[in-house]
Image (cartoon, rainbow, N blue to C red; front, side, top):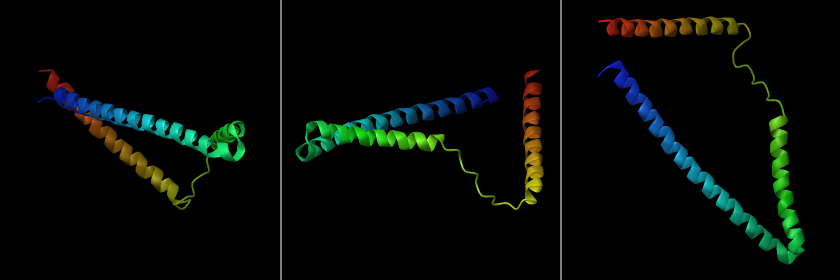
Length: 122
């Protein structure tokens, strides 16, 4: 089994898993939408005897509008900076360590690519 077969198998496995997850999430989204529709209908029917047909629908619409406004407000708000878990002086050490790890990973990838290229030149 060559490198190409290994990579192809890994990619197929990944694609199959993503496809299965996409189908599952689609089913969940459709069911969630159905629950939302049924809950909205139930809320309107429950409010009709109390406030009347027109106001019941307006109240439910206002609730949905409030959800939209709150969501949009939260999306517009800038993200807060996370509190530093690392002391300020230690950030230079962390950067140096990340650069060293990156260099090690780059060397490993380069060695694998060189080995593969040399094996294909037979």
